[in-house]
Image (cartoon, rainbow, N blue to C red; front, top):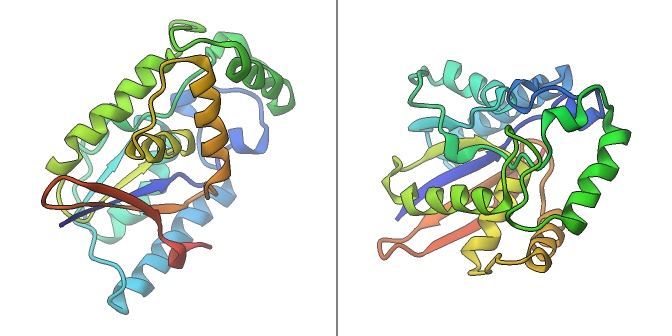
Length: 219
């Protein structure tokens, strides 16, 4: 059996409702940086107790907040950190273009995001730097297809909606309409998705995948 750990980033400035920034450049807050360090310390403690493994490889999305969350693990375990660590498949869903939300704070962005989930179809693109929902699903499906080729006990640092869609797709749920997009959104917001939440993805020798939250790592 192979195991991959999926980790959501620490608190970002966007999570606090700060003024919009281009998605790939959104950094962690001081709280988020502390959360990343705390996660490493909890991991170390559980590793010493034999409850968690030595990380073999680190991957992160192209978003700064994911790399900053991964950095304490890379530094502590002295793992390689180069362009091979950063993989596009882990990128979060970008439903709104930066041009749409430029200059806005969280309270102004929230209604736009809510409207998107209520009205956008799977083919809608808000701008050149935004995804269609079809593209997002395809990105997560590519990860599912490639996950068996990742090194056992690798850590993947990514994002909340992304992990929610991973769980949804592993349940075999289709997403071919706006109604199914809304069902995914309800599912994703109902499962544990706090900053630095860790999910364990087990892949059997037959290729069967199971995803579950690692409760011991909750801060």
